Image (cartoon, each protein chain N blue to C red):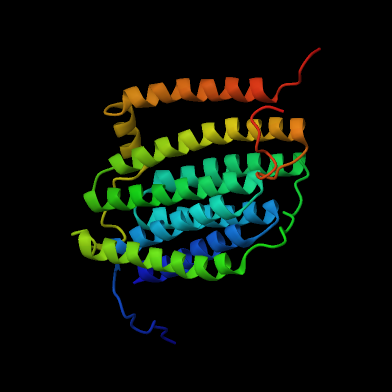
Length: 169
Length: 111
């Protein structure tokens, strides 16, 4: 009961923020909408029993990554996107219905082709998403990918420094 | 005073609702990637798509009653963090060299 209401609220919020992200011309507004999407998704993760992922979503995604985005937007003083004149009206008129049609087709395919589609998602039906269970899986079954990830992060740090440093003449 | 909610038309959310929400968010990400001309907004649309895929992973993890799907979404987050660091550094360099963030004006590899 409570799960249905929470899902309705936060799914609507996620879609509304996603639409706002696409429609806004100013990057700061888009970034704040993206934070809204991520926060809503964190609540949905909690409904799905993924407590650890919900916390990581808020701390890493909505916290760290989006702060990085906002820093860059403000550092570059990015303003509003300028409008391009002479954009064809036909593309605007056709684009939206085709997009809605495409989404409807995807929804129909999910409903009919996927056999587990109707199985209910009960709150509390799955409690294996806490830090303990995720940690156990991460450090036993997925130990090698986890360690390789550290190399990836190291390379990302090096790449960011090399790209963003000042050239010394 | 007793307060009870009116009965809802559905008693539980089906799994397909999560998958469809994920598809909608992914589609919106594609739209933003194609329509927006600001480099940073295009980049944020990619993040939106990654988030949509994460939702599918977690929903399937709930369906299968295993934590494995959540591990995958954890790795997606790690890759997204690395990608954001490098991508934003590239955007900084592009802006330093060309003084613009419009994707239409960044159409040459070499200055």
